[in-house]
Length: 375
Image (cartoon, rainbow, N blue to C red):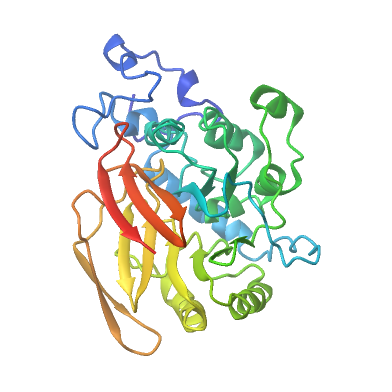
């Protein structure tokens, strides 16, 4: 079979019409797929297991973008008076942990490595998982969420939250709202997977953990330029930054502000968000979108890209020069050869007012530590 030839999108990789030789079937184990011999390789090439190639994703994504971009999208959910605050259930508000991972919804070997790893609660204890966008590829839909979310994470027994990514917007957030906000999930899926919707207050929301940490989850929309609900979101963000007080603030977006790949939307995001980040104690911005792991410290703020949750990994250049809104230039460096070679996730441990973030490879359990930093 030509690896560049698209496969039927309604067929999951576990129901492939192509019979697998015995040597390939041996890679399908409880712990996912055999990445153990050498990081970044499998007994079966990823391009043969995925039903579409990277070029097909680009073509499909572009066509969806052209169709959907003129639409402003749905209006935010009516505010219940709490400013779209969500309160996740944690074991101890002064001692808890959670997982950050982005771009998971490919239903791929890489995603199953990640989902299997984070399901080991004795190794990576967590109270919830926050997906940094692109919960589903290529373009939303309830059946897509079935494989990209419910099937992939069926062994993770903790709540899963998410911010929307551009691929989640291609159906105008219809599936995202059903699975993460309203809980109105198709009956055949809710009975088969027993999905417990977190019922988020909106698709942009925030979480407070005592008086020490505030997590603000933004929606950067289809284009990465806050095109949907831009004015309302920025006003809402300004209010949250002003009332943060002594709390450390973490911003969560799908599209990054700084990345080695230098995508066009980043300049606009920097123009709108960087001046606002200086108004409060914003210590980190966590994003997805670029299928790799990166961390860049700019003006004391950690800009972390975690898009290595399942989608095909993107190679990174060794360095890039970024022009800031004030005209200054920032040099970004690829600090590890493993940033674009490992499917990974971030395990965050909050204790005594400090958030310790450890980025771990999902290729083994326990995995190789790619990075560690304290906020």
